[in-house]
Image 1 (cartoon, rainbow, N blue to C red):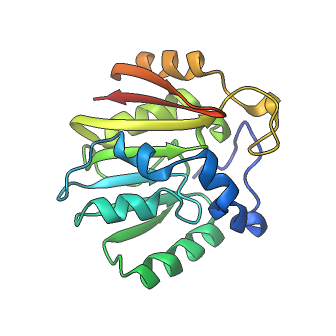
Image 2 (cartoon, helix red, strand yellow):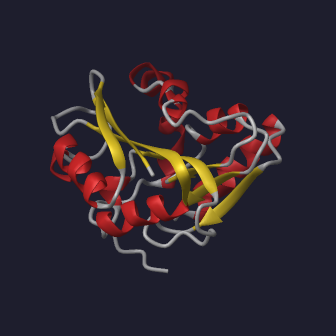
Length: 192
Protein backbone atom coordinates (compact mmCIF):
# COMPACT_ATOMS: atom_id res chain seq x y z
CA UNK A 1 0.00 0.00 0.00
CA UNK A 2 1.47 3.34 -1.03
CA UNK A 3 1.39 6.09 1.56
CA UNK A 4 2.80 9.00 -0.43
CA UNK A 5 0.54 12.00 -0.77
CA UNK A 6 0.72 15.41 -2.36
CA UNK A 7 -0.52 17.23 0.75
CA UNK A 8 0.26 16.64 4.39
CA UNK A 9 -1.92 14.13 6.19
CA UNK A 10 -4.23 15.30 8.93
CA UNK A 11 -2.77 14.85 12.42
CA UNK A 12 -4.92 12.35 14.41
CA UNK A 13 -4.03 14.27 17.60
CA UNK A 14 -6.29 17.04 16.28
CA UNK A 15 -9.20 14.70 15.48
CA UNK A 16 -11.62 16.52 17.78
CA UNK A 17 -11.48 19.50 15.39
CA UNK A 18 -13.14 17.38 12.71
CA UNK A 19 -16.30 17.10 14.79
CA UNK A 20 -16.36 20.67 16.14
CA UNK A 21 -19.46 22.87 16.09
CA UNK A 22 -17.51 25.50 14.11
CA UNK A 23 -16.73 22.97 11.37
CA UNK A 24 -20.32 21.74 11.33
CA UNK A 25 -21.50 25.34 10.77
CA UNK A 26 -19.43 25.51 7.57
CA UNK A 27 -19.92 21.94 6.42
CA UNK A 28 -23.31 20.23 6.49
CA UNK A 29 -22.52 16.48 6.46
CA UNK A 30 -26.18 15.52 5.99
CA UNK A 31 -26.45 17.73 2.90
CA UNK A 32 -23.20 16.39 1.40
CA UNK A 33 -24.07 12.73 2.05
CA UNK A 34 -27.54 13.40 0.66
CA UNK A 35 -25.99 14.34 -2.69
CA UNK A 36 -25.20 10.67 -3.41
CA UNK A 37 -28.93 9.86 -3.11
CA UNK A 38 -28.37 6.67 -1.14
CA UNK A 39 -31.35 4.36 -0.76
CA UNK A 40 -32.13 2.76 2.60
CA UNK A 41 -30.83 -0.62 1.39
CA UNK A 42 -27.84 0.57 -0.66
CA UNK A 43 -24.13 0.33 0.18
CA UNK A 44 -21.81 3.32 0.55
CA UNK A 45 -18.17 4.23 1.10
CA UNK A 46 -16.66 7.16 2.97
CA UNK A 47 -13.17 7.67 1.55
CA UNK A 48 -10.86 9.49 3.92
CA UNK A 49 -13.35 8.76 6.69
CA UNK A 50 -11.25 10.11 9.54
CA UNK A 51 -13.27 9.87 12.74
CA UNK A 52 -16.61 9.67 10.95
CA UNK A 53 -17.90 13.16 10.10
CA UNK A 54 -19.53 11.73 6.94
CA UNK A 55 -19.63 8.06 7.99
CA UNK A 56 -22.24 8.69 10.68
CA UNK A 57 -24.84 10.29 8.35
CA UNK A 58 -24.17 7.61 5.70
CA UNK A 59 -24.71 4.88 8.32
CA UNK A 60 -27.98 6.54 9.33
CA UNK A 61 -29.23 6.58 5.71
CA UNK A 62 -28.87 2.86 5.00
CA UNK A 63 -29.06 -0.54 6.61
CA UNK A 64 -26.60 -1.93 4.04
CA UNK A 65 -22.80 -1.90 4.32
CA UNK A 66 -20.97 1.38 4.82
CA UNK A 67 -17.22 1.17 4.25
CA UNK A 68 -15.13 3.71 6.17
CA UNK A 69 -11.77 3.94 4.42
CA UNK A 70 -8.82 5.84 5.89
CA UNK A 71 -5.05 5.55 5.79
CA UNK A 72 -4.68 6.30 9.52
CA UNK A 73 -5.32 3.36 11.85
CA UNK A 74 -5.68 5.73 14.80
CA UNK A 75 -8.49 7.65 13.08
CA UNK A 76 -10.25 4.38 12.21
CA UNK A 77 -10.01 3.33 15.85
CA UNK A 78 -11.80 6.53 16.93
CA UNK A 79 -14.39 6.02 14.22
CA UNK A 80 -14.97 2.42 15.31
CA UNK A 81 -15.73 3.54 18.85
CA UNK A 82 -18.20 6.17 17.59
CA UNK A 83 -19.98 3.67 15.34
CA UNK A 84 -20.16 1.06 18.12
CA UNK A 85 -21.61 3.63 20.55
CA UNK A 86 -24.20 4.61 17.92
CA UNK A 87 -25.11 0.97 17.25
CA UNK A 88 -23.98 1.03 13.61
CA UNK A 89 -22.74 -2.54 13.24
CA UNK A 90 -23.00 -2.30 9.43
CA UNK A 91 -19.95 0.00 9.20
CA UNK A 92 -16.72 -1.70 8.12
CA UNK A 93 -13.33 -0.12 8.78
CA UNK A 94 -10.71 -0.37 6.04
CA UNK A 95 -7.16 0.93 6.34
CA UNK A 96 -6.14 2.00 2.82
CA UNK A 97 -5.28 5.00 0.71
CA UNK A 98 -7.51 6.52 -1.98
CA UNK A 99 -5.60 4.97 -4.85
CA UNK A 100 -5.88 1.33 -3.76
CA UNK A 101 -9.09 0.47 -1.91
CA UNK A 102 -9.36 -3.29 -1.22
CA UNK A 103 -13.03 -3.62 -2.13
CA UNK A 104 -14.70 -5.42 -5.03
CA UNK A 105 -15.65 -3.69 -8.27
CA UNK A 106 -19.09 -2.08 -8.30
CA UNK A 107 -19.75 -2.74 -4.60
CA UNK A 108 -21.31 0.60 -3.54
CA UNK A 109 -24.08 2.89 -4.69
CA UNK A 110 -22.63 6.08 -3.22
CA UNK A 111 -19.23 7.48 -2.31
CA UNK A 112 -18.32 10.52 -0.25
CA UNK A 113 -14.72 11.75 -0.30
CA UNK A 114 -14.66 14.69 2.08
CA UNK A 115 -11.65 17.00 2.25
CA UNK A 116 -9.16 14.28 1.39
CA UNK A 117 -8.63 14.24 -2.40
CA UNK A 118 -6.05 17.04 -2.10
CA UNK A 119 -3.90 14.56 -0.15
CA UNK A 120 -3.87 11.90 -2.88
CA UNK A 121 -0.50 11.22 -4.50
CA UNK A 122 -2.30 10.38 -7.78
CA UNK A 123 -5.74 12.01 -8.01
CA UNK A 124 -6.54 10.40 -11.37
CA UNK A 125 -5.92 6.97 -9.89
CA UNK A 126 -8.07 7.92 -6.88
CA UNK A 127 -10.91 9.05 -9.15
CA UNK A 128 -10.50 5.82 -11.12
CA UNK A 129 -10.86 3.84 -7.87
CA UNK A 130 -14.04 5.73 -7.02
CA UNK A 131 -15.49 4.92 -10.42
CA UNK A 132 -14.43 1.26 -10.09
CA UNK A 133 -16.15 0.93 -6.70
CA UNK A 134 -19.43 2.47 -7.86
CA UNK A 135 -22.26 0.43 -9.28
CA UNK A 136 -23.67 1.71 -12.61
CA UNK A 137 -25.73 4.80 -11.86
CA UNK A 138 -23.97 5.27 -8.51
CA UNK A 139 -22.92 8.75 -7.39
CA UNK A 140 -19.83 10.29 -5.86
CA UNK A 141 -19.56 13.54 -3.93
CA UNK A 142 -16.07 15.04 -3.55
CA UNK A 143 -15.94 17.91 -1.05
CA UNK A 144 -12.96 20.24 -0.74
CA UNK A 145 -12.09 23.63 0.72
CA UNK A 146 -12.17 26.52 -1.76
CA UNK A 147 -8.73 27.62 -2.93
CA UNK A 148 -8.59 30.71 -0.74
CA UNK A 149 -6.98 31.72 2.52
CA UNK A 150 -9.00 30.55 5.51
CA UNK A 151 -8.11 29.31 9.00
CA UNK A 152 -9.76 25.88 8.62
CA UNK A 153 -8.49 23.19 6.31
CA UNK A 154 -5.09 22.71 4.69
CA UNK A 155 -2.79 25.56 3.67
CA UNK A 156 -3.99 27.41 0.58
CA UNK A 157 -1.17 26.00 -1.60
CA UNK A 158 -2.46 22.43 -0.94
CA UNK A 159 -6.06 23.23 -1.88
CA UNK A 160 -7.50 22.26 -5.25
CA UNK A 161 -9.31 24.49 -7.70
CA UNK A 162 -12.90 23.33 -8.17
CA UNK A 163 -12.59 23.41 -11.98
CA UNK A 164 -9.56 21.10 -11.78
CA UNK A 165 -11.47 18.56 -9.67
CA UNK A 166 -14.43 18.75 -12.06
CA UNK A 167 -12.21 18.25 -15.11
CA UNK A 168 -10.32 15.33 -13.55
CA UNK A 169 -13.53 13.57 -12.53
CA UNK A 170 -14.83 13.99 -16.08
CA UNK A 171 -11.53 12.65 -17.49
CA UNK A 172 -11.84 9.65 -15.13
CA UNK A 173 -15.16 8.81 -16.79
CA UNK A 174 -17.76 10.30 -14.46
CA UNK A 175 -20.95 11.58 -16.11
CA UNK A 176 -23.13 14.54 -15.18
CA UNK A 177 -20.31 16.22 -13.25
CA UNK A 178 -21.50 19.29 -11.34
CA UNK A 179 -19.90 21.81 -8.99
CA UNK A 180 -21.94 22.97 -6.00
CA UNK A 181 -20.50 25.97 -4.15
CA UNK A 182 -20.96 27.03 -0.54
CA UNK A 183 -19.30 29.83 1.44
CA UNK A 184 -15.91 28.18 2.10
CA UNK A 185 -16.27 24.78 0.43
CA UNK A 186 -17.37 23.19 -2.81
CA UNK A 187 -18.64 19.74 -3.72
CA UNK A 188 -18.13 18.13 -7.11
CA UNK A 189 -20.64 15.39 -7.86
CA UNK A 190 -20.57 12.82 -10.62
CA UNK A 191 -22.16 9.53 -11.49
CA UNK A 192 -20.99 6.29 -13.07
